[in-house]
Image (cartoon, rainbow, N blue to C red):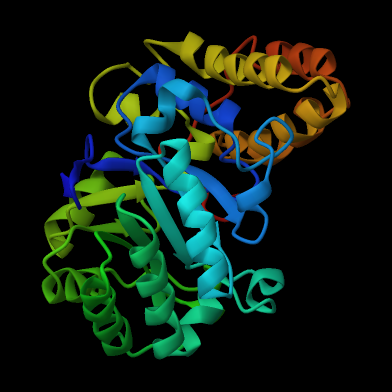
Length: 332
């Protein structure tokens, strides 16, 4: 897929995942294969220009992933976003992603994320400012907006393209929904038909059938996977035929990959309690795979040390519990 002057590998991308799309998680996904572009979690544009990657939880990376990793920035000030984008480009990332999709109250109150969609001119200025600052690909993650009328998003998509965006990742829900209603996929089709640059769809894609349906009904160029990647980090490898994730024929996968993530967290974080906290965040998504996942919360989340969590996981999954074909969106 051509994104600006660069070629992006694959059509299945890892969505930016605040707090959980950290470098250890990306390492596990990358080692499995099948993922096109990787994305960092949200990075604060105000902090990025002077941030120390050795100490940052979000603005950090592995050298080997940079050429296919996009750094997502959030901010309210176009000049701050531009300065942060320059740092991102200088470090060698594939590109910069502007967050206009996050509808979490703490982000919106700061004038960031989906709040930018309240003011079309302000949103466009943000893209223009970043575009002027860098030569690397500029992407925009956005959603339907604050009104259920998709024409606002369609108009913005056109203006983002005119402002210099090289690709769009679109989530077809209004900001106040917060997943209380299903995504409206025909909105993706409308956005795709409005622009010539690549458009990737996002939202409620949990099975290969979901992915095929989104591609067929919307005409989008690819899919950005979020929650399903958190629950099943091997999803990219499985959906591209690199691994067998059938629990009947390959039950070890369901134990080995969580343990690989825990190992990666331990290697990267001297603070063992912090590594354990990050792993527990992953486990909350992972247990949504199991038919009686709620009953596993107690046993699997017990302890504040990686060693305790490893023992709990191995013991709980010694005999693999029943796995649901479609992970519970409510548990996510």
